[in-house]
Length: 368
Ligand SMILES: *[C@@H]1O[C@H](CO)[C@@H](O)[C@H](O)[C@H]1NC(C)=O
Ligand SMILES: *[C@@H]1O[C@H](CO)[C@@H](O)[C@H](O)[C@H]1NC(C)=O
Image (cartoon, rainbow, N blue to C red; front, side, top):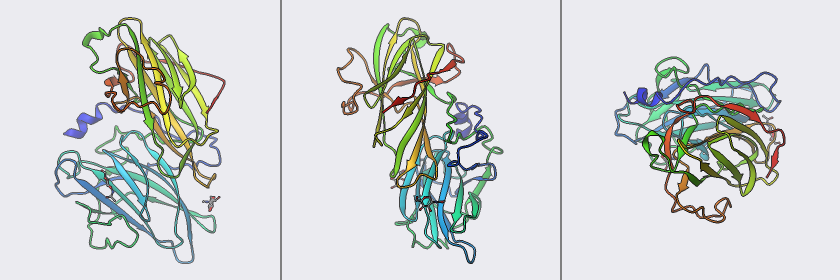
């Protein structure tokens, strides 16, 4: 089964929210949510749509929602027809804050099947809604959601009528069957980022047996926040075999020169950046070579500071690198890396020869 193969790369992560949370982070959890999907057999890559209509109890008016969400392959989230955001790795949850309409609201999510459609994907979410009187309710993914394959036109809009759609199939409870090993890390304030599930990367192809040429390589990853999400702060854990210098939006964040020691950086965004460009100059002094990074970005939803949104980024196949001479200005956000090939992946944090690293906080925050 495909999903058990995929699970081999997903290891356990303690995602519990820490005690003593800042006021802006509610203790949202997935523990009562179900993995839901569609039971129709479909081809690989087919779209599955899920909808949940939300109306308040008599006498109450809805104000806002805080959403934690993850999916087995990928998801796109819409609230009342507006595109909210996307994700593509089951072990990294996303956190969004949205305004709601007073009485009638629609959460709509689409995602892809892997192979055969039937229970071959999954969506899990918990939504905390707030009413005008300050009280709250929790909405979870379960069989009260409706599903359709393929999604008809305008299926994500507020006025679409889904009453003929079948109930979503409950694939299993979060943390139990069949995906008990998928622990979804949830962005929080304060941040919870670890190196779990980050991938050791190097220029592709990575030669077998660690026979990587000596020398320097440049790496880049561009991240565009979802609409209405403004980066406020970030935490980065970074290591490289043998040395690295890390840049974010052209600013030097820091460097390391001893691979068993990872550094943990705090970034404060004074500039409300609309994109984040990570650039790494890494040098191999001989033997195996690798770059490893994990980042939690905490977002302020535009126009609102009473709610935490966030996302994780790690080294993975979405990074790019080039071989040969290091191009001048490669660390600048506007450098054109469109011809750079994707990196090669060597396996998730914990693999030999690196095993477990020591993480040392760098005390002075970097302001960008
Ligand atoms: C659903 O997902 C695909 C990407 O896989 C996207 O292109 C599409 O626009 C999404 N949304 C809707 C409303 O169909
Ligand atoms: C959060 O703040 C915004 C604007 O500052 C306000 O409109 C909204 O009602 C608040 N939400 C909650 C849940 O208090």
